Image (tube, rainbow over all chains, first blue to last red; front, side):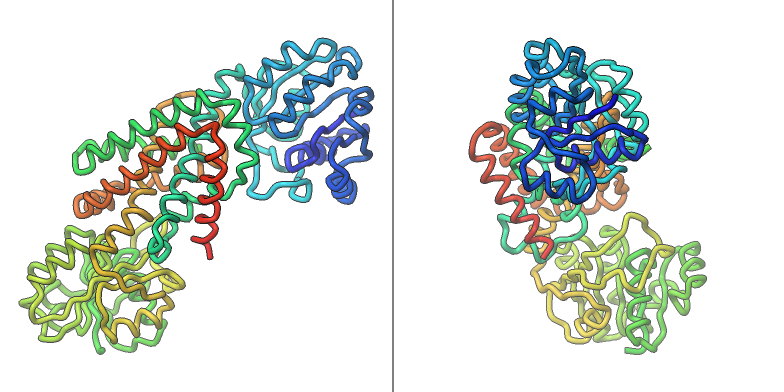
Length: 267
Length: 267
């Protein structure tokens, strides 16, 4: 692998560039992004040079699409004509089914593998990129590809193989549902002008995610609506159950199960 | 004020003792607790001596009830006969209406002021007590009492005056609802054996509270069920709204409101 093209040099794309560089990648790292981002990425030494998309596609051995989901879908629709046969193309989008389906029809000369690094930070942008962002984090791939897997292992992430639909069902539960719950909770607390007087660590913990910018979420909701709807429906039913059993002995069991689940997520 | 009796020398009672001592209280600090807790409290220098409840009540100028809620209710029912007239009695229970109502009939010789320091930690027990626990935290009082207020200010907490019913309504929203949401989310994620594969920071953030022991919560639920029920009902309605509008432009407004609310809680 001599040249890697990072399409969308933000937090994730920039971190992937820094991570493979530190893990020993000695070739060229090419950035495709807006002029302001390219300037920042060069200033930080994240990329070696910048190119327009078509040109980067033509010279890269690996194209890493780290754009918003709808932009990834657009890129997939146009990129195949420009890549050399066999070029490896992967993405870092937060939902996988729409992307893998688009790639299955649009990518013929290249080889596509859907990806989702389960990493992030509160702040975005290449200024926040770091070589360690993926370390010890799950990195979902929708199919096997030995060269890509080798790099993901070198940057310290844990590969999780999942088909796209199963991925989307699971992240609806572990990521999209928590976001909506945090948003709803912050909005509800915010609607009571007196509530801020008695806000303690619990409310702060649970409303931190609510500060996520909507721009990230629009595409997630539009490409994973049915899984999110199912996760929300199940969650609402569970809350109705707690509501009905508030003073009943079943609460103790529910707390026990939840505490065990929370501890197990941390192991 | 020459003697302070701490009834229940755990995290909160122990921290109050350490805090007033550091803030200049030069009198005796008497602990009322189980033998094991008394040993630990003395070893850490949290209390000067231990007494049975009745004896502590008879010699204290301030009785600080830092037990579980149901125990506070029991203590209030028996303590008044033992205190000297005018003894100040306060508590640190997480709900206020049941406690203030009990005190209004049971406390005649003493003077009762309901209290709720909005502070805590993940770990409990006098071993975790610290003089700084209340610093910069809200400390709710259900009525004015100048001597108590002066000590609360000296330990660095922010006094918030609220009547008991209003307190209970607000903490249902800012504390009890977040707990139930975290419990329900952890239980739902835990019920899917595959979910742990793709657990990222969002799920960890929102399930931390789910590790709280049920023993604390039983009394909160039994003494604040109607406010919690109302908060849950409103939250469920809000989630149904998000669910219905998942792909609609109203989501952007909902995210904007929630993000602003979350930021405002942090100011």
